[in-house]
Length: 334
Image (cartoon, rainbow, N blue to C red; front, top):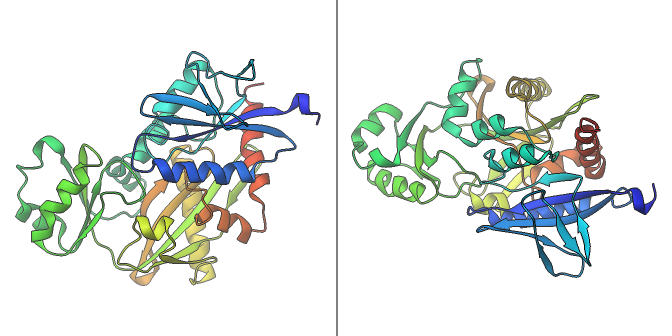
């Protein structure tokens, strides 16, 4: 493939949540994994109302939102494809996907509906429960009613310990494991700093695992399962991104249980109609019962992230995985 025929890939990163800096690190990872013989890559950072392409010389160019184009050395560049690696809004809640649909730009993730649904943990859990997927008991507290809801009613409904978290978001920002009723109100206020609604979720004791998956028209790939052993009481931000966790791939579970997890991951992917790489987190409770925790539709791609580990354990390369996803989606736009 000659240089003149290389596709231009925009790696879209940043966002407007606490996960902004993690997204930048994922963008670095994705750029390093790309097939540079096939693609020309630009990182595009979205933050605080500014959309900027980072040029090869280190300078920045404003992105024209009419068509997602920008200038590089006097030449107008319009990417052929957007690889979205924003963790949180607007890349993981469907907003960016809606914009890209409007301008006819192919992208790497699920569509607007799936992104919005998976971003809202309470909505997702109740939807998948109707398909027989096991999830923790939970209740939703909206911002406008948070001070009216009594702590005693929450504890009677969900029990202790429990998790208090933003209903929409990721990376465990604003998440607290609550052990006493006195800890409940501060945890709710902390979660409200990250979003408008709060989900209070029942605690489940067990082994935490995670499993990645992607599908194209030609193949269905479910990666090996990873066991997650955090140094702290739960898989918080430091565990995810600062190495305070033991990650074991393949997980120390039976082959039969691992297959069940992979089959469930594939099934959920199909139920929702996902696209691109997703990662589903689970907890295994007594008698090998599989409970879904959450779905990540733009999973981390940092050096400490699960997907690169699972791809390697599967005997694959990230370069070929990204190429599969890009070329499969581009073929629909030809």
